[in-house]
Amino acid sequence: MHRIVVKVGSNVLTTDKGKPDITRLSALVDQVAWMRSHDYEVILVSSGAVACGRHELKPTHDLDSVEQRQLYSAMGQVRLINLYYDLFREYGLHIGQVLTMKSNFETDEHFRNQQACMEVMLDNGVIPIVNENDTVCLTELMFTDNDELSGLIAQMLHAETLILLSNIDGIYTGDPKVPGSQVIREVKPEDNLDRYIVSSKSSAGRGGMESKYHTARTVANAGIRVIIANGKRENILTDLLCNPKETIHTEFLPILIKSIR
Image (cartoon, rainbow, N blue to C red; front, side, top):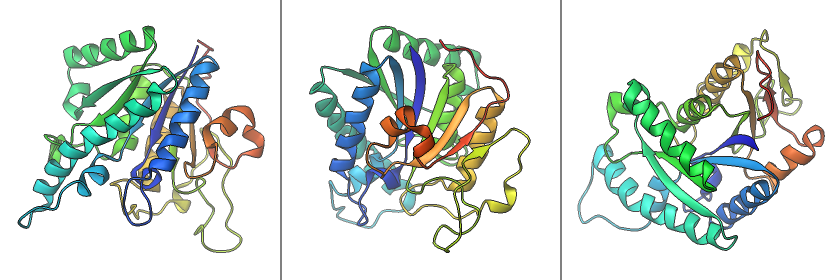
């Protein structure tokens, strides 16, 4: 089995109006189901809980940013995991929810417990769906974003590949909106792309290309291949696996090529 971690960002799973994009979510599930049928183990790191929760309830009074995050994530995670459950059930696939915190990666006991949980899920054909526990993770307890979380998961589970799905095609040589800017297709360990990285963040999530670049560098240095691609493109996962040369993306080559599992 080939083990792949797929991280899907909030901007992939939401519409331009910030509502959950059920069509895109369904298409993502279709592709993960295809991967499972072609000898891939998949760990899905999914954002989108806050976006799901925000449209479930209109508060009776103003909430501060912490209250909003806690309320919407608590409600939205239920809706998000139910959507995944119903969609994967159509393929006869089982899922399991894993809500984690940064502190779970900082002590040996919590790290091993978390690792063992996901390993037994994979051993039994269950797809782990991972997200940060936004209801209790605040300030210094938070991951930078789910890019960081997915990178830690990929290393913890010794994945072959980490795929970061964003709403753009990869890392560009300039502003993607400016004619002439091109996607950098391959990044070697010695390449420095700092001059191409801007610190702006997405509207729906906490991350941005700077975060993805940092995560990709760290994970590639640990010997895991990393791909940044556009999750809004049709069949992006299957195209990356079946026709990588014809599929636009940025790939970070690992320092050490890991053996096929």
